[in-house]
Image (cartoon, rainbow, N blue to C red):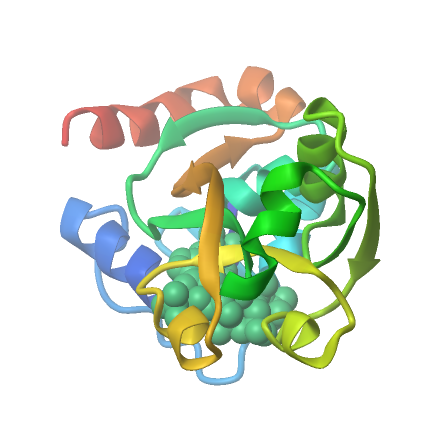
Length: 203
Ligand SMILES: Nc1ncnc2c1ncn2[C@@H]1O[C@H](COP(=O)(O)OP(=O)(O)OP(=O)(O)O)[C@@H](O)[C@H]1O
Ligand SMILES: O=P(O)(O)OC[C@H]1O[C@H](OP(=O)(O)OP(=O)(O)O)[C@H](O)[C@@H]1O
C-alpha cells in the first residue's frame, strides 16, 4: 500500500481532478472532515502544504504532492520524482511603484515574506543586504503599511497585487506542483511507485 500526502488548500481540488483524469483515483475522494481516506490500494492523507515534505521525509507518507515553492523553502531531503504541471504560479519580488528605484539601486531592503529561506538566498546571491520579516499570510499589506520595502510572494493571476497597488519588480522562479518521494520508500516500494510513475509519464 502507498500512502500519499496531499496538500489541502488551493492545490487540493486541482490535484484530485488530475488524479481522477489519469485514473490514479477511481472515484472522487469522500473526505468530508476526514484527514485520511483509503481508496483501493492507496491511502491519502490531507495535510497543510508546508507539512507535505515533512510527512514524506519522515517516511510517514511514501509520496506527496507539493508546490515547488514549498519544496524550495523546506530543507527536507526527499526525491523529486515528477512535475505534475498543475498549480502554476510565480515567485516574485514585488513592491510599490514608487519604491522601484530603491529596489533597482540595490539598497538595503526590508523584505516581508512567507518564504524566508528563498528570499534570503535570492538577495544574498545578488549581494543585496536585506532584513527578512517572516509573515504567515496577507504579505501584500507589508509595503503598504511600511513594515517592509518589498515582498517575496506567489503571484498567479496578479489580482491581489493589482488590488493592493503593487507591481512585480522581478521574477525569482516559476512554480508547479511536484510529486515527491521518501527515499527509503523508493527502494522498498519500488514496483508500486514505478507503476504510478508510468501512469504519469504516459500522459
Ligand atoms: N495564487 C496562488 N497563490 C498561492 N499558491 C498558489 C497559487 N497558485 C498556486 N499555488 C500553489 O498552491 C500551493 C498551496 O497554496 P495555499 O494558498 O493553499 O497554501 P498556503 O496559503 O501556504 O497554506 P496555509 O497557509 O493554509 O498553510 C502553493 O504552495 C503553490 O504551489
Ligand atoms: O495573483 P493572485 O491570483 O491574486 O494570487 C496570489 C495570492 O494568492 C496567495 O495568497 P493566498 O490566497 O494563499 O493567501 P495568503 O495571503 O494566506 O498566502 C499569494 O500569497 C497571493 O497573496
